[in-house]
Image (tube, rainbow, N blue to C red):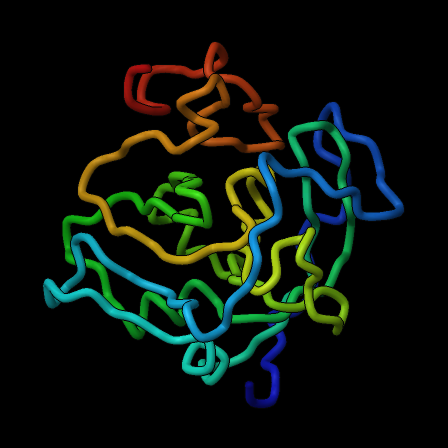
Amino acid sequence: MGQPESRGVSERSELPPGQRLQRGWPVTHYGPVPKFRPERWEFRVFGATADGDKHCWTHEEFGDLPYETIVADLHCVTKFSMLGAEWGGVSSRTLLEFSPPAPDVTHVMVWAEYGFSSNLRLADFASEQAIFATHRDGEPLTAEHGFPLRLVVPHLYAWKGPKWVRGVEYMTADRRGFWEERGYHNVGDPWREQRYSYQEEPGDGPEL
């Protein structure tokens, strides 16, 4: 990757309601850690793209995309928060630029290994600080923390940013991802403590 462009510092280095400060970085995920095979790895953008085509990058090609850094917090729904970490990788806005969505796209589904998925409103995905991270604090991510690629969306709970990401699907209507189908809130705003689906209000998401 080229020289990093910095997105600046986190806008809110404080704890959302119900969170506690975490000094280290606990490993939390569902299922086993996938084995990375660079020769088989491919990142795809598909669904309702502007040109109707699927866009793909090999691991080497993805590494040639513009590299940026942000300083942002990470808030886990299990109630720990890490403040002020530096994340390096490819901005979601870069992907939107290279693979534009169709005009009627409202949501995306982020797909990861083993068929894991998480849905996001397009506006959340297009946030200035949303990043497909390959590094944290200048060091490559470990396999347990999502190497080679994890999505970080700092203003939402961390489950909205899957580890081991393999692609993005553009959608013209919302549908729930893996944890959203299993009782987690469809939006996941930590500042409003949107942890569980029973807290949803009309318009927050499709019916379960």
